[in-house]
Figure 1 (tube, rainbow, N blue to C red):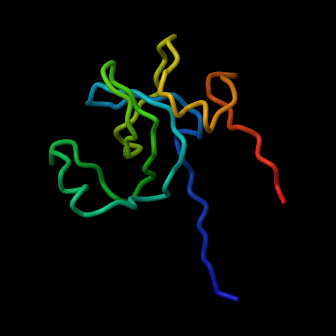
Figure 2 (cartoon, helix red, strand yellow; figure 1 turned 120 degrees about the horizontal axis):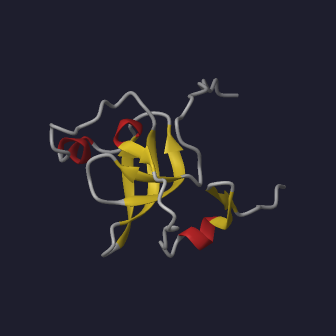
Length: 114
């Protein structure tokens, strides 16, 4: 059996939370979290140096939207803020992973466990 080391990482935001970017004009729903940066170096270097985050922190996958388009975003914890607006995000993929909105966040769809 392989020795797999897993480390518990605390995150500021939970799956299903609605967040907005600290600097850029978009918001979204978190659907996955990487405990630290897990994308390409090319992607990382494409971020303007003035807002480029450190790699050693959680990075979140978002169903993102900006008023014009829906897309997937990958954002560091330091560049996210809780979104307190009353309007729920409308990204069409939300319905594939979340069943409903409750207590300030989207609730994951219940999945059968084998």
